[in-house]
Length: 535
Image 1: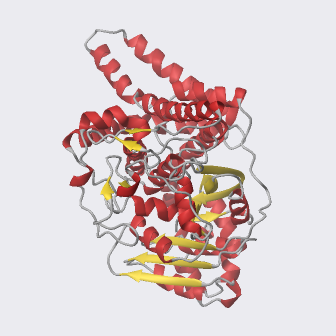
Image 2: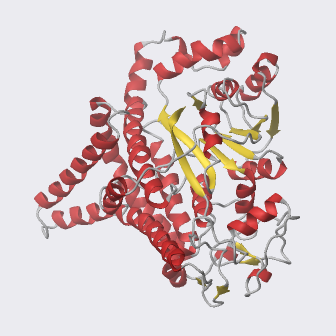
Image 3: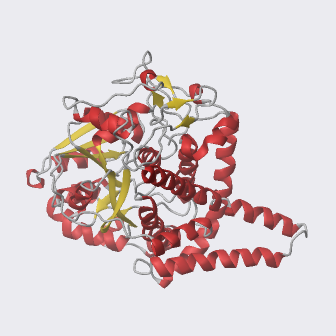
């Protein structure tokens, strides 16, 4: 799960409330008319205690994946042995392809390989530390792709807990793996519940507070922010990347377009970048709110690193898309060609591709005013790419949102695109501009609200030297946390408890310095020309 910026009320709250009051929910089909093929992809690195749960949850789905590809990036624990044991179970009725690498690669690199090698219609990405609670999870997210322009769908994520995992273990895992040795290796030591008090104390101090904090944070992000975004702009900005279904053709287009300029360096969290890129091309990322998954949370000692990766990726992704950062890009200059690039493959070649100033790639033939209409004989992928990227005058971007690749004119000096496409319907242009502005407003509001920790630090320093009263600082904190509790109570009360809300407050307070560091680090990267952002 990815929460873009540490939650702060302000402009994003105002937009969210407006979305709830003025806009209708985005309708999603409950039963899909099509039956696309699905390949599941599970990346793993030392996931012996969790990967069996991920596989078992796929085996119980009402809509089965055609194949499950598990990529082990040099695990040194029993991950491989557990996967092999589960692959040998014929009663699982899962075709599993197990790929092992001696060296540790990135999730982005492995996902690219699976996407390009697959023949399936959809790619389902499931993290090895995540399992699907709902048996209809895949069925529902697949059905969502029948809605207009949807290329990415995902369910609701909740923090895993010891009680939830014990229940899933006894109900689902033990019948699948009767071998006592494998069951022992595939489960945490605490799964049987017979642990010393020191273990329970360690869990209550290091992991339980994070689970409570994240349960509130996820509920607010999913029930309020993502829901309001889907009402306002018919899409969320990015998916919950631990269990997400992508349209394979759309996903491959994203990878191919950015191969030359970014390679595998798709920011510090690739699913946020992919979500932004799909929206930028006019696709939709939609949340299916009636199916759930659970994911393992970090401890108090490691949560700051995960928070940094998620938050910084939001800033980095915002920078890469022209409609969000045109003036900033002009100010900092085009430095994308300083990135170490991987070898260009497939349809993207060094001879035929020009590196765009938005971090993407632009075909030379599309830089002029020449246009073409896809023929009926073209392949599905070619038609899809042409339609989404606006190569045809009579096939505009599905959501009428200007993207980094859909312009007819590109200014050579700064790479800023201007859309001079005409339309026979005057209201169509107004609607396109309105949606583009709303999309930019949603992103901008979160960027501004994310400055709260920095502003609070500056006001605190001014209070220390006596330039502002300390009461002002306390009042700002009180108002911010009051609104935090109010939004949680109004929009996420079914997913949280009073205890989780109370525990989340001090944990969240401890996370605020990360917000200061994130902005300082990303801004520094922008001005020194560093763009090798990756996990």
